[in-house]
Each structure stands twice: as C-alpha cells, then as structure tokens.
Amino acid sequence: MMKPNSSLNLETDERMDIGTYLLEQINDYMTHIRGGRVSPELSVDAVAEHARRLSFEHPVSPREAIHHILEGLRQYQVHTPHPRYFGLYNPRPNFMGIMADTITAAFNPQLAAWSHAPIAVEIENYVLKEIASKFGYSAETADGTFTTGGAEANLTAVLTALVHCFPSYAKEGLRSLPTHPVMYASAESHHSLVKAARSCGLGTDSLRIVTTGSDMHIDVHALHHQIQVDRAAGYTPFLIIATGGTTGTGAIDPINEMANLAEREQLWLHVDAAYGGASVFAPELRDLLRGIDRADSITFDAHKWMSVPMGAGIYITRHKDILHKTFSITADYMPKEGADLDVIDPFTHSIQWSRRFIGLKVYLSLVTAGWEGYRSIVQHQTEMGNRLRQELACSNWKVVNDTVLPVVCFTDSNIQSKIQSNFASFICQEILRSGQAWISVYKINKAPVLRACITNYDTTEEDIMVLMQLLNGARAKYFEEASERSELNQ
Image 1 (cartoon, rainbow, N blue to C red):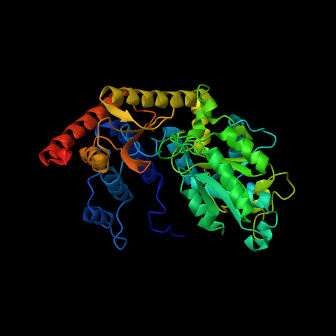
Image 2: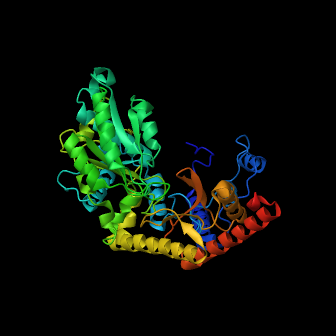
Image 3: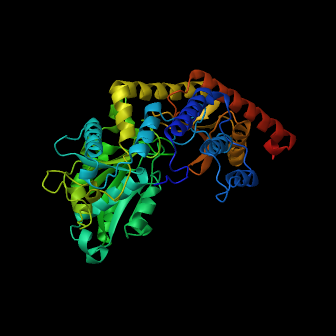
C-alpha cells in the first residue's frame, strides 16, 4: 500500500530536521528577546498581506511554513515574554511549560474519560489537590478542574453556586426558581463575570456592582446594604465574589470580612484570585489573602504568576460533590472501561467535554522548580514592583494605587486634572512607539493614569531603569510640546 504523499506523513529524518530547527528558533527567541521590540509597528495591510502570503492551493515545505509563521510572530505581535512588557498578566512562559504543551500536542491524550488517559487525569488531580492545599483547603474534601482560563473558572463558580443554592436549577433551570437570583462583585471585578451572568441565563442585571473605597477594595458595608435592599425587593441573593488581585490596580478585597458576611447571609463565597492567588506561595505575602480558605470556591490562573503557557485556568472548591451535581451526565457512546473503578470521568466534572492535557504544563513546572522556586519568583517580582515605586518617587511621579502586588499605577505629581487624560495617553503612546517597553492606561476614579505591572520572572533592575528613562523622556517631551501650544496656561 502506497503511503500518501503529504506533509501529514513526514519521514523520521524530516521530523527530526523540522523539530531541531523549531527548537533552535524557540531557543534563539528566548535567548535574545530582550534585544528586540516589545510592541510592533501596526499596519493592517502589512499584517494581512503576511498572513495571506502562503496559499492553500500551492503547499510549501514544512520548514518554509514554520519559518513564515515565526517571521510573522516576531514582527507582528506584542511580545509578552519580553522582560520590559509591563502590561496585563501575561508572563514569559517557562521552558518546561513549553515542553509540556509540545508533549501534550504529540501524545494528544483525550481527557474526557478517565480510562482513555488515566495518567493524565491522575496527574491533574494531584496538581489540583496540591494547589488547593496551598489555599488552605483540606485534601480530603477539596475538588477542582482545569479550565481554559479564569473566565471559564468564574462561570463554573456561578454555576456551582446556583446548583448549591437552588438544587432544582440543574434540571429545571431558572424557570423553577420562585424569585430572581442576584450576585455581587466590586466595581473593580473582572468583566468575565458579566459574561458568566449572560451565559448561565441570569442576565447582566443579576450582577450587582458594589462600590469600592479609595483603596479600590469592595465596600463591605455597601455590600451588606445592597443585599438587604435586594431581599426586601423580593430578589434572592446567592453569591458574593471577592477579587484577590484586581486587573487594574492589584487591589485585594477584604476576604475574611466578606466570608463573615457570606456565612451570616448563607451565601456562596467565590474568590477570583486568578492573579493574586500566587501570593500564597510566598509566606511573607500569604496574609494578603487571609480568609481565602473559608471561600466556597476559588479561581486561579496558572498561566499568570506560575508562568506557564496559555491557557491554564483552575477552579477549586471545598465542596467535594458540587462539580458532580453541576455537570454529571451519562452518554451511551462514552467509554465504559472504568465503570467498575472508583474514578471520575472529567467530562462529568466540568463545562468541557473533549479537552487537552492542561495540567501537564503546571505539573512539569512544579516538579522542576518546586514550591521554593515559585516562592522565589513571586518574591522577585514583588521586589521589582517595589523598586519601580521607589524610582517613580525619586523622579517626581506619584503612585496612586495601594497594593503590595507588583501592579503600579501612577501619574506625574504635578499634572493638572484638566489635562490628565491627554497626558496619560501621550506618555503611553510614546512608550509603545519606542518599541522598548509596553505599559497601559487605566482609569482610577475616572481619571486616566499609567499602569505598569511586573509579570516576567526575568525582569531586572536594568529593565526598570530603561522604563524610567523612557517615562522621564516622554514626560519632558509632553511638557515641552504643551508649553509650545500654551496648553499649560489655559
């Protein structure tokens, strides 16, 4: 029988050649990334032209195809692995995480049924239990699942809370409920909660946005008041969401106080600790999340502070049976080899059905770095955040958020409020155009400020100083141009 003539059926030597070439290119990228641009020069036409340069009608060699995509990625993307990417929580992935995704792609285990990938499922269970214990959960009762990211984990939290509080919901849906359920989160909470409200049928009006104080933490008194108002109006509160490290300012809600309120009101408490959850890896930061062990469920993203490739979200809970109650289902076509064993098929345990081996990147990272390695990573990035705050103060910038996490929001100490919006936008665009760093603009109390976050385990004091030079240069340029336009005197 003749072998099909296709790049889907490469010979051994071809696979080795392509694999070696790709690994060399990945190593070169990781080794020399500091010398390249952080952000690309954007041109829709140029990017679209590159994407369409190769034709599906005229196949090219595998090596040429890989070269083409690597060239495009080097030139046309924000390089989040760069040590001077001070943006969202997108860190440089560690090499073992990269290797894990490669292994997963090659062996392609199917994690829907335990019997089809028992070692993969048990490795994930092991990792989930270990991480749950770091949050103070009991290994005997803790349960969880890997997700595509924090958005899926937060949706899982809403669904499990609904099933816990309204047992008829899983079978009969919202129509079975006598009153309208409502949930609560701060004005700084992640917008994936809005999607979750829509996805589970509650609608966005069911999400009560609670004000924050000047520290950007949820106002617990306002939260309690809103719960009482809703009860009086005939609504049924069922879920409180605390944020353990907000996206904008790194604020951590008073989890312990919220746990007290949740217990008194008999509500499910979920903590979205997608980013800040890694604080539990460093003993000196653990108290930032005091009370998180009292939460009914937690969202944690390993692809943030654990520096593994996208996406590796985690949902964990202290309620052993809630995932089963929420997602359990039977299907005649699913494998039955493990039916007589005391095991759980993952497809009965989460939103996902067929899915990849997400947990391997976390497992390989942990078994090679250990908990001590992650303590060091968290500590280093925290120290770099403190160094940035110190340098900003020395250069007459004003830090405007209050957090121990390496999320720094700032503006010029003497900037006038009437031009603050233009100022923040100008500085940010100057930094991005330079290609030497990436920062963003975020609004605090409706005032745009600059935001820089240490997300990379390879960021050094030298990188902080490069950012400071860029900031100070951009500020000098702004005031010079503004003075010429007489804006400062208007």
